[in-house]
Image (cartoon, rainbow, N blue to C red; front, side, top):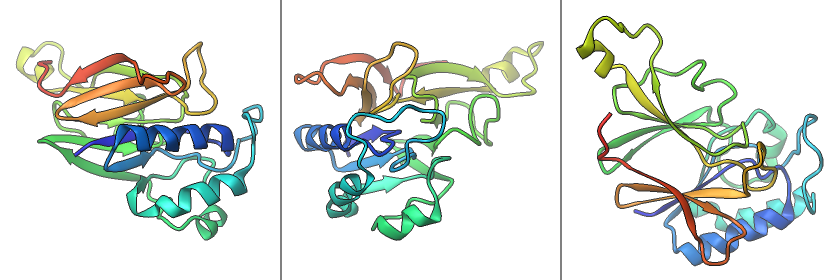
Length: 202
């Protein structure tokens, strides 16, 4: 299965349109949205072509291909106009034997991780900054080598589709055949700028 992962559209019709064009070009089976779909949020400037109604009109026809978790800017009112579930706090995915805990990131994140097994992936949006980092679970016994080896997980973030931060690009991720790839949304050739393979050792 090929999955496109994107986050933080924040009501930008321009970048939602580009995201869906890329989704078609990538021939992905599913589009996983990590929240903050329609509202720009009080801490953010208005994104390019801020038009939530247009975003609604673009996403609803693709409802059968979309998986989504709730962002801190998503509300019950948004669910009334979107024809796919958006209010789940997280979802668990099994990708070729790899467990992925996908959530927006305002609740579950590296500072407050959920219950994860060694080698699991915590997939967040929210920060608008792409990431792929190894983390240790809180309470890991650093004096015990075996316990330390069993206390690690991977944190991933696709960055933001519409409002990238920390000098990052407008980005998204692709998962296919055990490989996570980070790509620039505005690169017409879909150039990969980072990858991670699920069979890598910790």
